[in-house]
Image 1 (tube, rainbow, N blue to C red):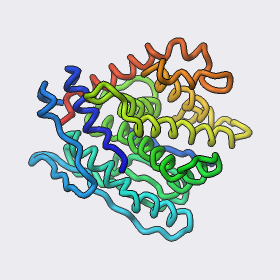
Image 2 (cartoon, helix red, strand yellow):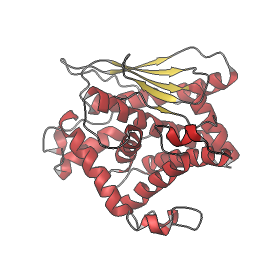
Image 3 (cartoon, rainbow, N blue to C red):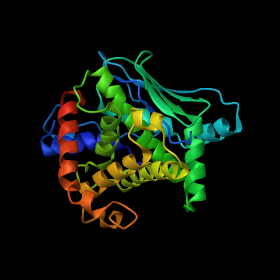
Length: 289
């Protein structure tokens, strides 16, 4: 069972004394008390998390799947209770002003998105299916686990859009970049033991690997790519690698290679990570349970 991330993060922030857009994600070609004991604890997969009396909660809905790709992606998500665990993370950690449905859906493409009108998060079955294919092709010993980790990070990216919209958070720059930063912040911030959860590190690393595969599949870039609200896939790879490296340069030094994160970028990544961490810890300070 994957560890639960947001409750751990909330505890870590408390101990340390800290604290919409409609973006989509396409990898296809195409907190209160200062005492840690008062912080919410992670719950098991079969526990039911109720919302505050005055707040909302995230609920899970698995929609129908008819195509082979969607059926495979649905099975991967449902068998591993991926959406249930993610919703539980949110419900134990964030003050939601309204109920937020988290849908697993057949979308016709590998994608994920926050809908600011319907106030829903959707993880497309095809995205999970594509991730499984990417990591199988890459020779992973457990491609399912890698695909699930990448979907976890994809969800936290969409949670970035969700929090920006729900809490009317001020951001500068492109919202898609800010959402990538939120995913990295959630997954790379140490817990109350001072360590980053190993599964969380794998999740953000596999998120970057999925974009690397997408970048490699693109042979030409056109005007639409340059004008897109998302950074180019290869840029997102370097951004994510930079934040991973910057969060702990000693532990993640293997990312800086001739074909990986360039040394010139790596030199500023520790400071870049501090900016990301400071920004998101400040933005979410009033919204932890």
